[in-house]
Image 1: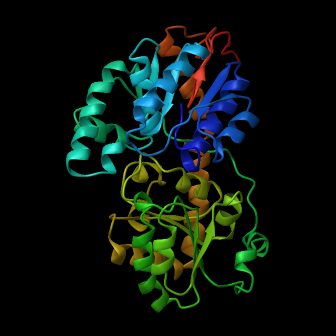
Image 2: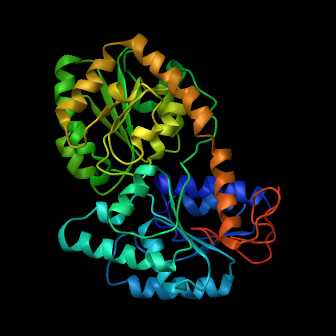
Image 3: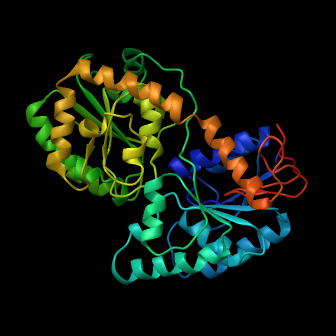
Length: 387
């Protein structure tokens, strides 16, 4: 089961579904309507079952859990794979260990809150671990954060993966994006792709941008994505900042960029840096979960900054904008690194092996032969995980 239905989680689920249906599993994706996930999952070969649930925790969680229970009973899966906090809550309450359940946090919910709410979120995760056959983390950093919170789980770490990109030339990409019309061909362009929300830290980037604009006045910053903070960020934005909104042309934005920045406050392992590096673009990241692990060896010093530190962020961005040759070197090294270490095929195969391990039905190819998966994903009965 999955909630949210847009952004990195939706892309991860869709990519896994595509690999799993090709491997012969019957996959049912249970998710709310809207966003990119229902259509993307259907195009990837999954059955899509409507599961009405909002993103935030609230009084509707009881009804959401009851709907999840009815849906899972109807589908009768061999395994439930719950993606992110809301699906992880509803699925595990609905199933309570009666169906093998894999939970993938995509960053811990207790990192997003403070005080009593954070304490309650940690307590829930500790309790829910008893109903979880495996907690699937996308980085060692995410796993360590769970362990430090006192979660006693059976852990598996499988880093996110991305498909290989057909890279578009920078000039062609810029000319194809109407928002960049009139921008000088040699003007530096920084792109930030992510939901406009506190987690992704775009407000810190706007603060940093005031310093950057003073040093590089012809530079432009484009925020690609939408979210609850858009109106606030638009009021805070200094000159030289554009808002592209949600886009189906994310790869084109990466291709158009000289530098991609993601100033997150917390992550498991963000997909944006991997996608940008796959397109041959250098990245500047905050040193949160998964960021250090995803960068090529030797790039941490130049490309990592502390979270919530606009001065350090501005310094790192400004330094790279002022050195085009170094940017090109970092981007090409990043492309090779992602191709070698974060290939989606490797990620998908590792998840299939995990299913087989959880189900105790590992076949000669490492998959759960004779089984099926509900994803945020469910393998559902009657599928066969065979290549």
